[in-house]
Length: 309
Ligand SMILES: NC(=O)c1ccc[n+]([C@@H]2O[C@H](COP(=O)([O-])OP(=O)(O)OC[C@H]3O[C@@H](n4cnc5c(N)ncnc54)[C@H](OP(=O)(O)O)[C@@H]3O)[C@@H](O)[C@H]2O)c1
Image (cartoon, rainbow, N blue to C red):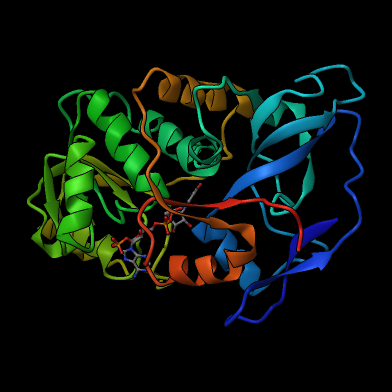
C-alpha cells in the first residue's frame, strides 16, 4: 500500500512510498483511511524521524478488519481515530481505545480535525481549575489547538484574550468567543489568571509578566522553535508569585476514546466547530506541511485520501 514516509530533508519532509500492509496487534482494528490532518508537532518529528516511524496521528476512515480481541467498532463502521503513528497511509492499525464511531452528520474533514488538537485543548481546560470568570491569555491562538481552546474556554465562562497574526484570524477567534485579540503579545492587557503559552521565545517571558499574582502559566508548546529565557527576578515586575506548569496531552488516565467521544458529541451538538483552514488531496501533503510550518494555515489542514497514484 501507499503511505507517506519521512525523507529527513527539511525542504520536503515526506514522500509517498510503497510500504508493507499494517499488521494489527490483538487490540487493534485496521482502518481504511479516507482523511487525515497534519500537526505542527509531527513536522518537528519529521525533521529527525525515529527509525521505523511514519507520521499520522489523526485519521478518519472505515474499519475493514475489527480487532481480534472482539472489542471496539465492527467492520464497516466509520470511525475517527488517534493512532500513535502511521496514519498518513491508505490503511492503519489503531488501538480500539483510540477509536470512536461517527454518525453521518459529521463530515470526514471535521472529524479528522479533532483528535490531537481537540484532545489537547479539552485537556488544557482541565488543568487550570475552573475557568468561570477567569481572564485567560492564549498565545498562538489561530492554530489547531488555539481555536478549540478559545471556544471551549469561552463556553466554560472564561474571558478569552488571544494573540494572533492578522485581523482576519482575530475575527474568526472572536466569532468563537474571544473577547479581545492582539497581534503582539506585548500588547495584551493583563493581568491574567491563566496564560496558555505555546509559542516560546520572547512570548513566554512577556506573557509570564502579565500573569496575576499566584496565577498559572500552562506551557504546552514552542511553535517558534526558540527556547524561552526566564529571569527569576523578573517575577517581581510581574506576578510576584505564580506557577509555570509543563503540559503534555498524553499525561491523562483513561482511554483516549472517552475524550475523543466528548469532542465528537460536541461537534454533533453544534457546540464545537473545527476550524478547517485548508483541504487538499493527500498527494499535496508535502506542500501543505510547508505551508503549515510557515504559519500559512489557520486551524487544521485536512488531506483527503483518494486512490493511490
Ligand atoms: N504539549 C502538548 O501535549 C501539545 C499537544 C499538541 C500541540 N502542542 C504544541 O502546541 C503548539 C500549537 O499546536 P497546533 O497544532 O495548534 O499548531 P499550529 O496549528 O501550527 O498553530 C500554532 C500557531 O502558533 C502561531 N505562531 C505564533 N508565532 C509563531 C512562530 N514564531 N512560529 C510558528 N507559529 C507561530 C501561529 O499562528 P499565527 O501565525 O496566526 O500567529 C500558528 O497558527 C505547537 O507548538 C505544538 O507543537 C503541544
